[in-house]
Amino acid sequence: MLFNVFWLSMSVSWVIEANTELNYVWALSAALIAVSVIEPVFDLLFPLEEELYD
Image (cartoon, rainbow, N blue to C red; front, side, top):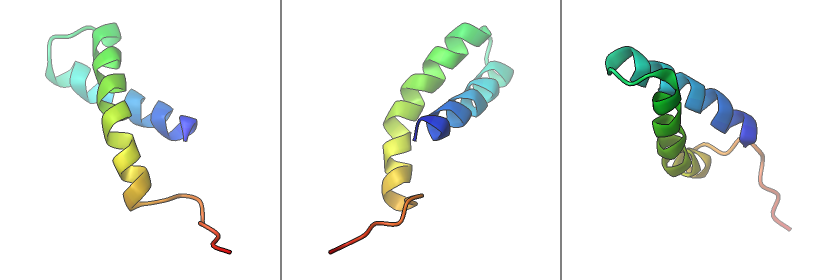
């Protein structure tokens, strides 16, 4: 999950930096906040690990 947050936040920060006038540090901060809210939704919709039910 940490790897998913890392690459997703880096991608989102690049998009934010390219489309706004924020520098990279502020774009990364905004991306980390956005990803921390959105990423759990992705985990619910598309789980990467198979759930085992006993």
